[in-house]
Image 1 (spheres, rainbow, N blue to C red):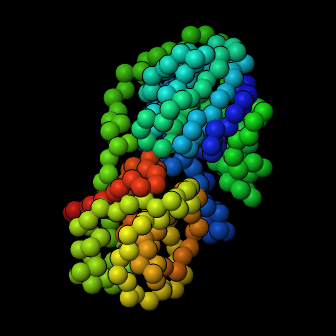
Image 2 (cartoon, rainbow, N blue to C red; image 1 turned 120 degrees about the vertical axis):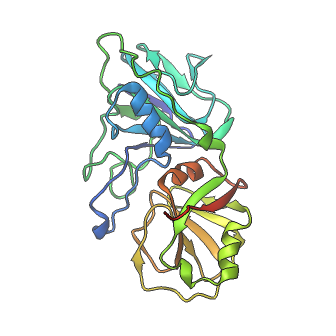
Amino acid sequence: MVKVLSPGFYSTIQDIGRFGYQEYGVPYSGVMDLNATTLVNMLLGNDKNDSVVEMTMTGAKLQFSIKTAIVISGADMSPMINGNSIQLNKIVAINPNDILSFGKLNTGFRSYLGVLGGFNTETVMHSKSMYKSITKSFMLAANDKLQITEVLSNHNKKHASIRFDTSYVSSKDLVVFKGPEFDMLSNEQQKALFNKSYTISKNNNRMAYQIEEVVQNNLKPIITSAVLPGTVQLTPSGKLIVLMRDCQTTGGYPRVLQLEKSSISILAQKFTSKTIQFKLKAQI
């Protein structure tokens, strides 16, 4: 078992997402940074869909009551075991009563904690991903108790040599495809999307990231249509909104771009005042 001594700013249980229920208005949810979660579960030898703790901006403080192994990836929040620093992207053995805590945020914005076998928490609609009104809790709280599987022998570290490029955490480039309404834009509008950097506004969360700069817009709203995590909408005021994992399933703003899946992970590691640049993926 893992006891939550302090949840940090915003910590949730997430897996790769809740699929097959979008026609009922249920968001995909799931981890914001799939790159980090993939690495965590690969190093531990877990299933790719085993759940992790996603921590935003500040880390949680957790006490383990049993023996296990952990991996932390994504943002560098200065993780420590019993006050001693530990490395990211490495398997760390955990003993009963060990306390995991975090310090200064050095890089990125979201950090991911995986345990051997994943967290055995509530499953709703084939997913453990927390979401308000879907799961009993939508974020971790102090004194929560998370069930995990005890390690009965030394964990085999054969996965510890996996090579994985973590430079995406600091990358500014978001690879995109043309959205369904992209060709409705003028040539000037299209060029504006790719010829300058854009700034993350203070309005950023698991539902969507808004951009500070305005793109001149004279497009009419569209008939309400399907949207996905990574869809870039252009509002009547010229604001760009990049939908994220907890986004709605339909929308009425023109869908001018669509982020490549790996670019959602890049954006998930950005916060207010950080800059990004859209890069159109070459068509084959």
